[in-house]
Length: 260
Image (cartoon, rainbow, N blue to C red):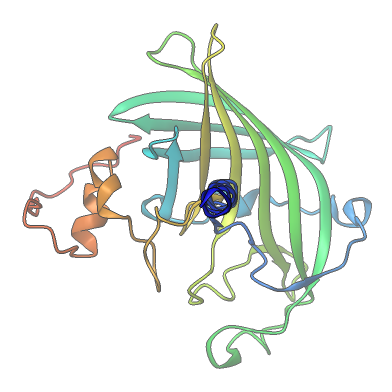
């Protein structure tokens, strides 16, 4: 009997420490060349990567209860004096508390990938893509201290890109229709100004990266488990018509974007 109890304790401990983390492979199985080609590719302008996606498809969480956070980059400008740096200005929104922030993205690594799929029915295969890859950077964005409940976002950014036939960097949406697709993965923390208070804060295009698998229950597209809907995800629940009798669709039309 003691042996059985001991086995159960070990199994429960193992399950506790092996919690599944979803959407942590931005490459979705693509092969990658480990060589860092930052010196060969850094003179390209990558700013388009971070302003391409419509804001309604950028999903983020803050805190262990996966409270929704919205972020929008209003301006991304390459530093003329340092090609590895990009100056960012934008706004964040948590529970309708909207804050300005500014900071920078610093590129650390640029790698090439070997693509095996070129979209539905290989629609991108003959579009003149010269090369494609993964960009890895660090970011630090400072919210305006004069506003309420503000802090600092910091962490690691991963973005997929490709070089088109005109030698211009483009946002890699080639496999956008893949169930596992996401891009611009920001994984890090938010730390309150003047405090040790620190919260997990992750966001990306089309999915939330590096979160527990019980959060995003969508197969073909992003969808939120009903237990998290109350944390700012009601519009996603309505969009996906989740079977919850307590949800009533809001038919009022939005007059302006939240960051305006």
